[in-house]
Image (cartoon, rainbow, N blue to C red; front, side, top):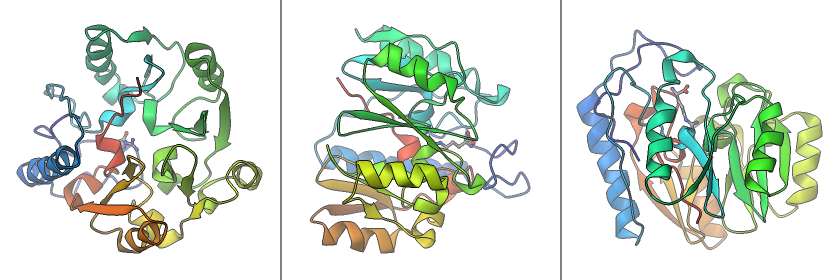
Length: 257
Ligand code: ARG
């Protein structure tokens, strides 16, 4: 995770960002700390990177790489405003004995890659280039399933789909092309289906450890749905970060050894 000390909305690269909106970076830090504390209270270890001036979106740590089986496939950001973020993530993995594979193609890490059922689910359409999906498969040696995102509000895969545990997911079907919806139905017939209200609350932008599901406080509908399936919702208010177009998942790069 990366503390949002320098968080601001200085440019608009997704429909949620509006440079005329006031952002309270101090409140953002407080909210972010509550999320970090919630993770730690559930037994997770959190590493933090040092936030850098001039990189207001660095809090969205999920975009820095994607890891599985001890291998990290690095990110190559679509927009120049964020491209310098990749280096800090790369240094983290290289200094901690991960195998780091550098990308040559545009991809935004866990923003567009998810891991479920031994597969890498990969989004494209807005940020990650579909050709990077093949590069990710070569780098990570896991099957990659390409899914086409079609709603600009849900521009990253992690705003439209999330793994709930090792073999099940939740997703908002309408964020995907018809064909990709069919693919998802084939792979995950028992998926928890989210609705537009969930998606707009950034409820899909969750992190689950297989038991605890970390959600933002706006995601009340999703909290009930995951509870019905036996998970424990853990809610944190991340209202400030929503102004940047992100929530729980965006703040957390998961480390899959
Ligand atoms: N402002 C950031 C961007 O548009 C938000 C990134 C959200 N991160 C995520 N994993 N969905 O790039």
